[in-house]
Length: 318
Image (cartoon, rainbow, N blue to C red; front, top):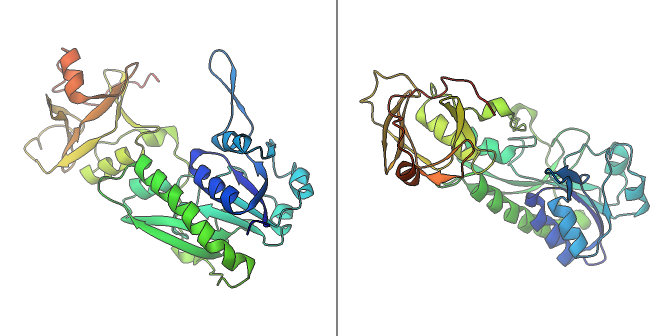
């Protein structure tokens, strides 16, 4: 496959193993990624993770503001195939139709489940027991093209956004390189997606990061791990945000007379919070303006008595 001319389109860290496996096995003639960002007080320029990898390999980088109108440079490269993974823009039909072997997408779910920009977050938040990656032909819809191949993985109790993200990224690279020969020789069996089975994993909005302690403990546990480590699920404590990372659940119903969200106990084992059907124990937290820390370390440096405080009784100042 070394003579296969590929243009790769991607942006975040998740895309890196996919680009790297293409570099190892194909002729990557160009990389398309999102424009640079200006960050910080010093207004320094921040490259996308994919741009950094492309530059390390001396690969041409294109960064159109709007690929739907700025696509001619990609066509001029005359790729045999375009491979996308978490690029972040809608690909115009003219590009979908141009390459000999069409446009192929690596998506981090078992389609038609969890179409959209945050499938890994939602696999955890929505309580899925398994997920995976899909290699698909792209069409004009959002993750709605024909399926070429899939690979699945069990979602472990210990998984959070970081661990599942990294595992699926590696799986995507592995599955892509196994699937490419069947795309090139035309032996793959395209499978239409069943529209009746479609679910969505849209990008997480800020208001969705707030923990609702009236939910059951499993729903809260899933939300917290689905947003760990970024952006972090949060609550309001004394008019400041407190983010939650590592947690566990308890079936303890001895605080059933307390309001949901009440801190009922605080010790070296964690911050114990009453919820609808038991207790959420926060083991790792981040207070507004502070670093992430274990609750046992928080206790050593904080003399404030938090027991009895009801979370989310206050204004979010962030």
